[in-house]
Each structure stands twice: as C-alpha cells, then as structure tokens.
Length: 157
Image (cartoon, rainbow, N blue to C red; front, side, top):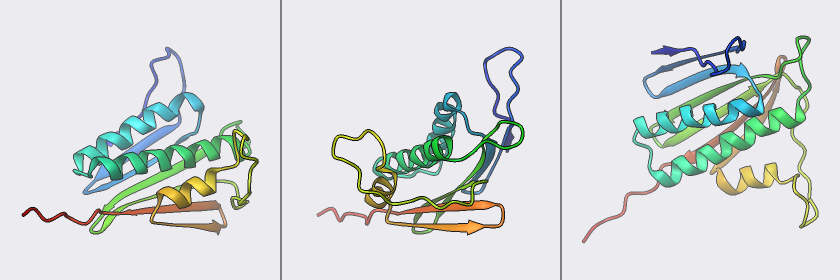
C-alpha cells in the first residue's frame, strides 16, 4: 500500500510519501509542526494494525514525536527552506523499532537542564522510554534509532 500524505489546505504543496508493507512503514516528509499530528495518526494506525499493545504503542508514539520535534527544533533548513526527514517504523519479532533520519550531521547532545527548563530533556526522555537507543552519523546526516521490546506475556492461573 502506498500513500501520499496531503494537507487540507487548498493549494498547499507537501513533500511527503509513505510505503507500508508487512510490518514496515517507511515515510519521508518535510518536517513541519502542523504535520506532526498527521504523522502520529499514521504511526498510531500502523501500531494498532500490527496489534502492538497499548503501552508499547504509547511509548513509541511519544518517542517518534520527540524525535521529529528534535528535527524541527535542532536541524537547519535545506536549500529550499525545508527540514526533510524520514521515519522507518518496523514491527520486529521481539518488539518495535523506529529510525528517524535527518540531514544534519550533528549528533544530539546530552545536557542536564535546569529542573524548571522547558527544553533540553530529549535524550533523557529517549533513554527513559526506549529499551535501547543509538545514534549514527552518516554521510547524509544522522540516524536516531529506538527500540521497545514486546512485554512478556503474563500467565493466567
């Protein structure tokens, strides 16, 4: 199934496409604040479709939102004034993984924000919600990877 993510604005130009097949969602798009809700809805629908439990789905939605917000806030615009990123979301045998790729080669920086600060907690949030996370700098930018393992089934007596 291939989808083109559009907007409700007449005459708006959106640079976005997604492909979904066999437990994998691959999206590339212009990261704008007004599109984050659309992306969250698409991710939520796929997690539901893949029958990911609610707790894992909530954690993954929060992580994806944080990663895309970081792209919006911390990456420079390209020559056309856009922040292009891609999201690869996969249902794997032992959980769910997501990779957000952007065009900025600067890795995220861990900080210890003031307790009352409204920003600076992105990496702490990733570490708290993900079971594993990693960053790779590539020739095209960087990849930020998160993994959430499937919960252990509970036994019923």
